[in-house]
Length: 410
Length: 163
Image 1 (cartoon, rainbow over the protein chains, first blue to last red):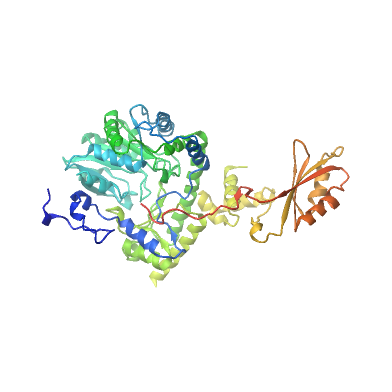
Image 2 (tube, chains in turn green, blue):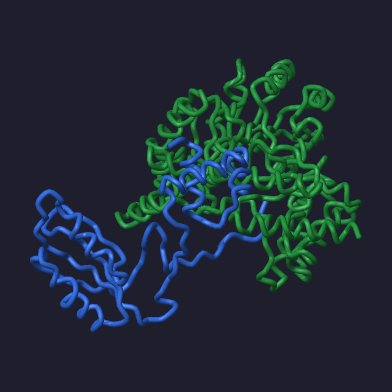
């Protein structure tokens, strides 16, 4: 129990005069405010409708009509009940089939696939099922903002491993080894990566797998951007590496590849022992993922749904090329993002910090992008730019950034 | 028709103002290849025209569009070709299609008002020798044409900044 004088001071975002703080658990009070939130507030507060935002983290496509229509039809037919805790059996089978034909993975839908409320719930369940107080969770950074707070909430210790532009932001075996201690329990991989757009090939992942095995680690592999891989080759799932299937919890979902962010549809796959523990937490906290989301997800995995997905992927690839060339042409170093839908150019040459650059960019050039430092170690000096927006908007944004850079120079 | 040309057409169909340089970047192709592919397609009349799609109902509500089902006698040796040509040469005629089924030609015409359209049908269309009969239907509202939805709001509903 924490005594009064030991309670940590935390910045409260919402109510300044709540008076109820002392009732909160220390772990809840210790959750840091989101760095992204500040920029969200900055952009929202500006009444300027002229701001082009490259700060989003979701597709610019609306869920394809055939998928929406399937959900609407299901609602009309009265499908509004709970489903099986693990998810509709036909959806689990479809997910297993999709993972097999797309990524050479073999999961038994009966006990190795769990339908979750977004990939986010998958990450939460996995960490809650694995972490004991004091366990060290290895997290390559810069990375998605959720991993660290969920780790801390569970009593784990977040160990950030910096990745570098020189290595295309891949996790290197040396950097991984240097971070391992006897308390290391879990490695969280997120490739393709938010925010860097980095991917890891089979050859990149093999030495990582070797280290994972040596140190008996469990890997949570967040592969939500798997379909957004633009190397000309398919994404390689960590779980498909030799010997890795049993010690990997694969987390993925429908948000990015199938434009279903708001539906909150994801899945986790892994060894029955791990999945059944996650299922037990899930059944008490959530019961099941929403039925209309599951019906929609099922439709998205049909032949027609997959064709729609392919069209969206091709469109992202075209805009990726446009944006990366645009940044390089204007003199900003930008490593080639081969996955996800983010470019991560460096703004170091301007002498400004990421936050200074991003703030001035919004206020003076009316372009919103997320400063890299909010994503952890290695993010300072970079800017996360989402290119999931129209070609016209991208070109306009690039022109404004170029003009802003010229203004900074003078 | 190679894949590059098909991809170029997909992009130009959505935005005819894209430059060859932008198209080349987006497709990961050389600009010279894109420029010559476009030139070839223009020469081969694969690309017929670069036009602008206008929602005329927002400009004025003075245009009236009708679809006319035309039954006609085909010409020996030439089928429906010359009848179709006689009809489509009129600038008021926006589309002419040869149809299977209960009638032969589907003709779309546009006029300033109902009277003008009716007058065109009775004076110019019905009087063509091989035309047996016409049935005129007036378009009340255009929802979608050539893959473009007119009434949809294109607003971006996403939160401006999200993780």
